[in-house]
Amino acid sequence: MTQHNEFGWNFDNSYARLPEMLYEITDPVQVRAPESVFFNKTLAASLGLNAENLENAEGMEVFGGNRIPEGALPIAQAYAGHQFGNFTMLGDGRAVLLGEQVTPSGERFDIQLKGSGRTPFSRGGDGRAPFGPMLREYIISEAMHGLGIPTSRSLAVVKTGEPVYRETALPGAVLTRVAASHLRVGTFEYVANWGTKEDLKALADYAIQRHFPEMEQQENRYLAFYEKVVERQASLIAKWQLVGFIHGVMNTDNMTISGETIDYGPCAFMDEYDPATVFSSIDVQGRYAYQNQPAIGQWNLARFAEALLSLFHTDQDQAVELAQEVNGKFAKMYRSYWLAGMREKLGIHNEEADDETLIEELLTIMKEHEADFTNTFRALTLDKPEETTMDKDEGFSGWYKRWQARLDRQNKSKTDVYELMKKSNPSVIPRNHRVEEAIEAAVSKEDYSVMERLLKVLSDPYAYTADQEAYTTLPEKCDRPYQTFCGT
Image 1 (cartoon, rainbow, N blue to C red):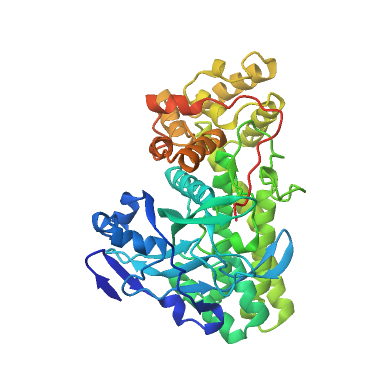
Image 2 (image 1 turned 30 degrees about the horizontal axis):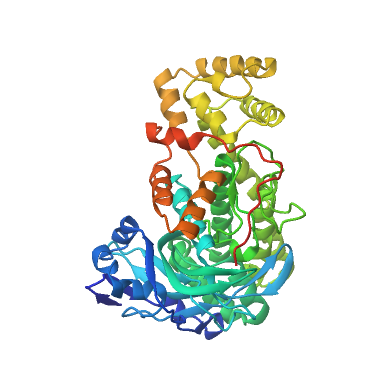
């Protein structure tokens, strides 16, 4: 590892020491005029980087792809994936992994440029990214971090000074993404299909050493590794559901081994509660609807198990049996995480058998009244049921009385209840109309102040401060449902 003190880079390139089939050495394609738009100083400092030096022109040359930082070894990663259920060969078609930044505390994070030009995996694409979608990923990933949900993060957005051609010419940009790693379910699918068992073992050993070193001493460490990934994904998807987040494209190449949320394409947050909500323009069948996310997570993990079967046991039938047993735990794990989270959202500190019924009754009433998901729990947190759209409903009034009786039985003060609810129910989320407003101002007017204010509010969504009030308002009703696009 080489420390470049001027910027604080401390790169290692452990992924490039894996079998060569897993990557192609690929430099980013240089751009005409890199211009810094957003730079995450707080994140930079946590990575051990010198934020002040990186903000200068030389530093932005790195984030634009024009300069390779000392110690980096840029590669494009190979992987496969089930996209809307169909298996295909993939890979980093518009991204380059510069390397792994090792922080002063010894943590390791991938530093990846997204939108950095063609790679051997581009499959006819230009490898570039429009400015708007890169801003969306910056906003949503940083909002997820503020919400306490495991996620990749955004270090910088740099305009390239070059157009990107889609339906029309759009300004281009490069996003610098930071992640615990970019190991995906699809990475293992790729090796299982086109590599050797030795390649697969090398990849699994690497993933265990990097993310689950405590598994190395397990009798069947590969099965223990699989179960740990199952658990992390159950916890992650429960966290999504608890804040109304819809990923939009839960392909196996977008499911990480680390348990982080990654690849913010057609993602969005639900306003009015409807389990069938879909935002993505390409998800015409609703495969990745809000209500389907847990089941899709388990389906993806079954594909992961299939890729690992040869490592579970030498006898295929026994390997399948072991895999099915672990995969079968997902639903119970997920429900446990979700139910615990819903109890916290309602200020419930202990457990009673009828809690699940109480929770489901509320959600049913919310759906009937098209109640806003976030604002309903916000109003309950503030003990202002009159601010919900359900306050005149007899069903809700009855539910509210049962909920208050439930709270009285747990022997906790009102302050205890409020504090638990406040840290479990965000006051603000990245509302779709606010995200669009910020992107529009930045792209069309080069006005970045709208996004800066939004990011500041989203950085501490549980604060319940006065400046968050304006961001709790709902958009005007529209005849057409809100749609998101992949932005590629």
